[in-house]
Length: 185
Length: 137
Image 1 (tube, chains in turn green, brown):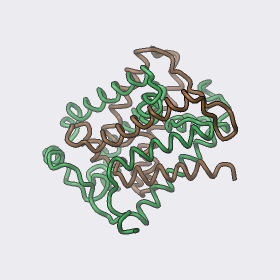
Image 2 (spheres, helix red, strand yellow):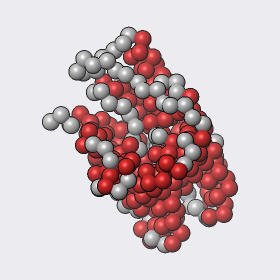
Image 3 (spheres, chains in turn green, cyan):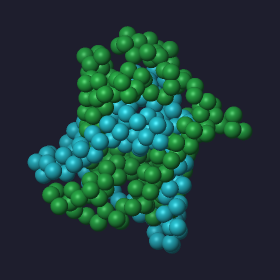
Image 4 (cartoon, one colour):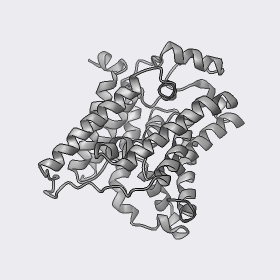
């Protein structure tokens, strides 16, 4: 059984469980949206004293912080007990495209060229992670949600704003992939 | 413990995002290069089931565990807010290969360097909060 679970899971298992997570949160009177946690963290760190946007009762969002803690634990369980250490099985075309940019084929979940400690603390690797993360945080709050809040919860509720946000996600993602990455790498 | 259910939901989320490789930078690159159905399959399945779940909840006026009606707050209509915010988010998503959920799952997966992206994401959220009144919404 454990051996079976240690293989990569097919995409539909993930889609089904994500929808199930959304249903569980709705049943418990909440809604599925992960990036709100970033605002909550700012508020919990005292940002409400200087910026009004963070001046709210962040303790009311404790449930979502617990979900975040669970997500970290879930990643730990997956890596420690449910992983056979196999490389991500991406398509040959992607491997070729990336190798042209100097990024070697997968050896684990993440590319060495960005995520290894040595590269993450080189100027280039550090800026990629820091500025990339910065754009994710800034953009998610500006757009009022991330992949979970807009692409899943919002589109499930047939919200046009969420569709516009997801179109934006793709415009930005395609620009980075096709225009910025050849310049960066 | 009343919070336990949220931790368990999070664990479920973290495990499945890991095991379906949705936390992988490579999978996000593959998606933005349209070279595999994998990520579209994940998001597509979740959305189709999500639409059905939301429809059924509304149609049958289902209630939550405390017998309160389950409500959905409609999002306020705007184009610049969602489009510009979305584009900025997407620029970062393709670079780090992780949206906010997977960033934290990656911590559990012990890719410690993702903490740099998490710090960036918190800083980005803070800057948005500080300058939001000067941005088009």
